[in-house]
Image (cartoon, rainbow, N blue to C red; front, side, top):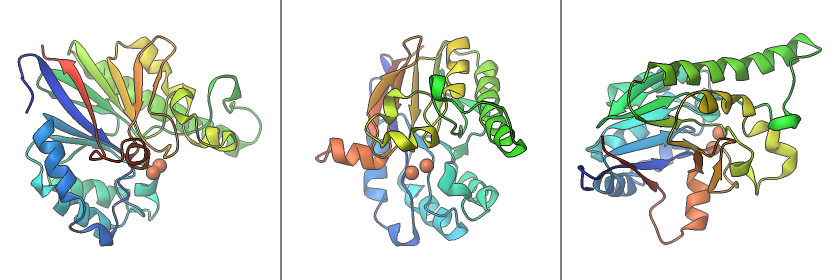
Length: 246
Ligand SMILES: [Fe+2]
Ligand SMILES: [Fe+2]
């Protein structure tokens, strides 16, 4: 445990992709994260197909964690059409699943939303043409508004934004450029410019880059588990991020 007067420490990881076969395999590193940090942040793709069985395995694995667990869902958690069940099972296990909401851990605010894709900067998909394209863009705007309303609820001086999709192109570098548009959206960056945020964590881009910055200099960390495992093969797959305690 960190010196709580000096720092609040968060262990962050995304893309656990928990399956039924994961039973017994995650609790070791969950226990290490719980020991090392004051809270655990899970950046979506908690399960592989979004089934109730997978969510129950994950809930069971998380039972060793003694610190608050705050999560957002990812696209994989929606695959079976049972995202509400996944959320409910994890909430019953004490996980705070954010979808446009905010929580506080030791005076640090955490605003969470899944986010959505659509591309970055000038390559962003525009709301133009067929209704299906407009609906797609609308979904990204809707997720950006969820993040914004979560940030607006916080009165803490320090804030973390917790996402699944990336808000910047910087942390998807390394992925094939052809799929950048499916890895995140600059529309998620807008609330991070409008509201003061100390750091952003996300997953989804398994082959992306570890760190980047928003246009206004906020550090963004891609904590997708496959990326962490590949970059730090000798360490447990979570990123420790510290913010000064208030
Ligand atoms: Fe993933
Ligand atoms: Fe994903």
